[in-house]
Length: 483
Image (tube, rainbow, N blue to C red):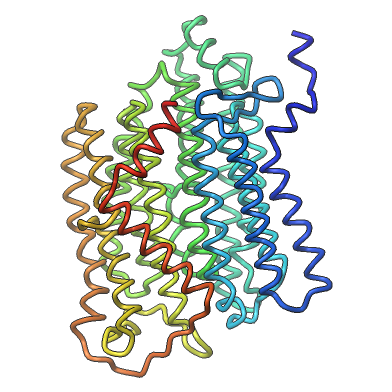
């Protein structure tokens, strides 16, 4: 036992990608003092992220999961696949941010540093095999994201977004800590595998306090991934935050939340699958219903995408509810697809933003295909994908999640999901209808940059490639989770 308690330098080796991102963030803050050109700072940020990605690749534990710090931190295929999502999220966010932050007059170096710190927190969450490490990662992610949400200091709605996010985020952290303390009090450990062992050996799975601890942990992550009824912050925060940060937040923290949910429910509370599925089923139905129905009434496209994001969280939850490794695979597969289609959609929203024009209203898209056919075609691909129309990746993502729910015996859940998916097609296709079937009311100029073009090309290509050849991504996910 004494040997296990000592921390060696070999343990630090597994932290190389996280330490790399932290160092890159600190370098960016120093560079901001001496470098005038923000493009250079952004380029260093992307280069640093690629170095961290290479570090993760070198440590890739498909077949040999490695643990450090007395089993509190795990590097395995599951955590590394989520880290890949976080790296791509940083790179694409930086690409769509450059011109936008200059227009918003909020082009500061610490913006890119905070993206690094926030993503480091997400990576720690994905690798956490202990509730304490999980909480540390969560706070690093959350505190950085609160600041990013209120980054446009001179805009009241950005300040409002940051405050709402901060208060409700702190509220959810309190739930998590309460859940952790109840679980620790009963099992005597915060290690996920240790909790699973204690629950079975002490025969306390039927204990109401165990159930209460589990509920609190689910509620805490319900806030993070915007599940109904813990979603109330999402529409206001998505609308008020800088659009590039809305894109970043809609993918990163959501993926981190699902990474933790999968790890905690499948590793620590695997024996209570019946209980946690019973909690998640009504939450998933409410989430799909609320997201799909309220989005119908939105005229602000950022609010519409916020409610759409809530509905997608409901679909993703089906894979977790299935309670199988294939179900988890379908959820992780959906998250990777969601990264590309969502960031692509927000990139088009950013292109409509220019001096004096927000470009967030549905009316701004009227007749867009007449003046900007390429941008309209890209938006059409992303909207089709979000609606789940073949041959886009969104269809593949939904298909596998629904299929795993049916295989696990939740046929009625899959039917409910299909109904709400059909309802949600209305507001995605409404954007397409505005672009292609209405006449332009005013001249619309798009603000583009080389980095924005690269981000759009990559996201659109991936949405189509994963839609036409779904096995490429699915086999990689399956290898990560089951390998």
